[in-house]
Image 1 (tube, rainbow, N blue to C red):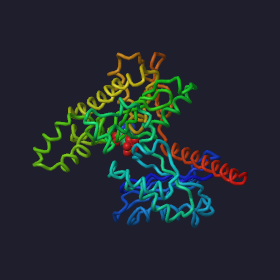
Image 2 (image 1 turned 180 degrees about the horizontal axis):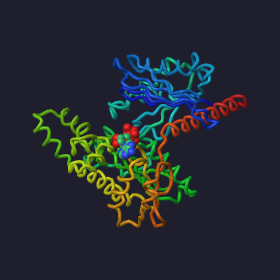
Image 3 (image 1 turned 135 degrees about the vertical axis):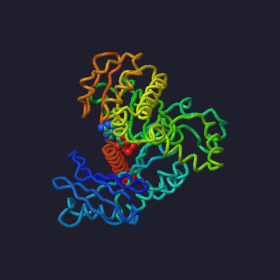
Image 4 (image 1 turned 45 degrees about the vertical axis):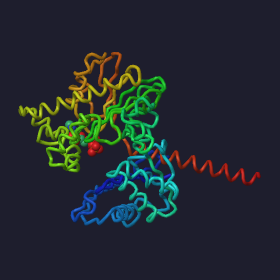
Length: 412
Ligand code: ADP
């Protein structure tokens, strides 16, 4: 079966086309700056040169339409027709408490998904737009929603309950949800595979360190706690997001910004984190270069980030009653040996022995520590592969249950 995975952001579309039985990626790419006059498409298909296409894209409909044209039309086509696509898997950021696993989208589910928009007003609307566009352009092709929050739905109430009046939970579903669940799940599962141990016996903390950063404590293969909360603004210090701060700071800043709460939220989301501290960049490569030149604020920003991650890791250990494996993933986690070293230095009280040579050499998945109680790994994340696998599993289950239902009807 061929499965198309779509990740629709507010002005972007990322995609991959998988041949599931063959375990192959047939095409991948992304469209950026959708809605602007200088939108850019980058498309790669198996056995072909990367194709760059700069043309206005009015909206996601145009973007998906172009993508389907690349896949199925003309000399670039790698599909005989759209009927070859057996399913579409969508990344949906927020599934609320309703969605604990991935689901096939039907009109009823689509209606329920509409309700999740208020929990993630920046992320869910473009995700749902992707679903609507595919309903139009790929009629009859089953679609599956795979949620970033679903993996964390196994957290116990003491981990997800905020200490505010409980009626906000009852009435408005205010609680810790956690995000990056597709990545944490993939990375924890892959780590258990690499060390050939049953996930049921492992205590793992996965560190998804990218522009957005979060941690997850996994035991028995399930998320027990995570650093992000009701929104992806909380938890670790990030590229431009503040992470955990004293909530009273918000009212202080609102007063300072002449009463504008939206202005303060914008500052906390887009002008804080390592960018806010350094005033230089949210990109850790720029910060490392500035730090190497002796820029004190860049050095401070990198230290604050490393400490925030180490503090977060330490605070998650009670959730799983110990630690066997620490795993780094995503842009910074996979590529910055300097940041991994800084974080592990703050964790020297744990039985961790980073192998500096392996840490420096590591560009692919593998262990970067010497034998000690806690093993340290780098495992590149692959959210698209996880979404494709989920989509395939859900569709296979659906086919099986349809067959069983038909048999029941025939037997009746
Ligand atoms: P997202 O998917 O959240 O946009 P990524 O996981 O792609 O983020 O991570 C992007 C971040 O990774 C960039 O902000 C950059 O700072 C960091 N990064 C990528 N490569 C390196 C590197 N070689 N050294 C340090 N940081 C890196």
